[in-house]
View 1 (cartoon, rainbow, N blue to C red):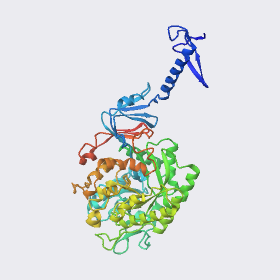
View 2 (cartoon, rainbow, N blue to C red):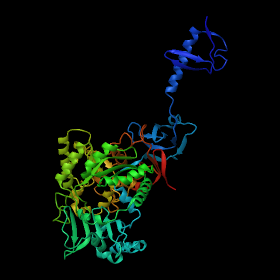
View 3 (cartoon, one colour):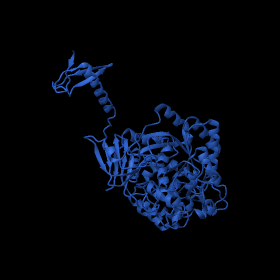
View 4 (cartoon, one colour):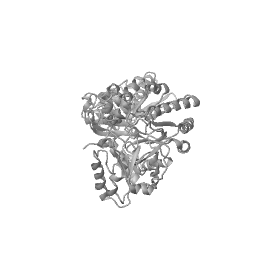
Length: 590
């Protein structure tokens, strides 16, 4: 009879189907008794199988466990949870505390959310990030409420400038003082040695002082520009206001900011948006391949705390196609693949393209800043190359034209998951609302604009057209895909204010306490989804972002109050306490 003595602490390994015990100690399992191999080997096999199964189901150790939280996951199958386990930059599990504690190891860190609400990191689906960063250090004109206050800002700002330094950004709003456009005479006496080119907050017109006009060679004899307007006085002399494509007369004269200033601007912009819970942005500047350089420098230096999806101008689609073929489309921090174009201007500048004239300017229907036939060629080529296309369209005629072009290109290039986007989609003809869902076109919208423009839009387009302005409810009811953003620098990159705007539609002047066009209000959940899952979908990133689920990036925000439970009109008072990107805290309110 063959006998075996096996230690309780014995180890083993399998070669083929044989079990080879390696005796580590002399004490046997059954009090040192010798047992027949015919009895012992099946027992050992049973123990081995049980041990192997146990090892196969061992959960990975988390680097961070978040506890004591109310987590809105965005996952419809598991919407609310109390704890979350994170490994590296990825979510391992979301659920109840007992389940999540199984992921704890000796080195696991803890984050106590103190019972606060956690939501997925906000994704701002439309920003002008470099301009926003540069504007943080520039003259601030948005809240100047009188012409005198506007001019005084220049008198104060210029004191710290060297002669010859350009004054840019600004973001003024002439509706603050009743609608009169500023002129170069307002500021010339304060800025004789500093060229000025400050934009209205919508970015579709700018004020140039005499020094800037001289530098650009803009005079009384300068011819008009397609897709733009040189505003002139009664004698035909430029007042300093240049609209849309006419702004291009000055841009070549403005010196480039330089590498150091660009890098500072991007870092400042990241820190600023992180303080408002933004973890990803879609940059929508319509520039050439060179605009990627600053973002690539940041990525190469491993200095990002914000994830970027960076667009190029649609006319540069071949450059983007070639770059992706050569270098790829990027990674989880910096991604490319989308192109941005414009078809019209803005409502505030009277350059949005409408079927009918503006109510306050009966001879004016706005303008196209790009010819429709050019847009068609660019869109068709870009789409055929597998690139995503986003087009700025604000007036009802502009939106209609873009929907027609998208429909034509899709029919000609054949079916695929293309996710065309209309940026802003502000003033939609009622018949065009169902076309968004029918054509799979994403409405990329900015709810803050509704409570800003709502102060004066009725006088510009009338109450009838206002009924489908920022038509969030109508679009969702028609089952369209909705992605929210800010349009920063045009509006602040503050998603909580955006949610407040979409839910209440109370204008900034509080003149509409029940909401401007209240039938277009949506719920907190719907607005939050547009800032998270909707925005992720708009960038083909719904498998990585937008909800807090296992396998997705650990990008999330802790809020100081539960926005689902407080009065809607107080949502804008909520604050971000912590912003976490890839499992690391990138902002903590002091």
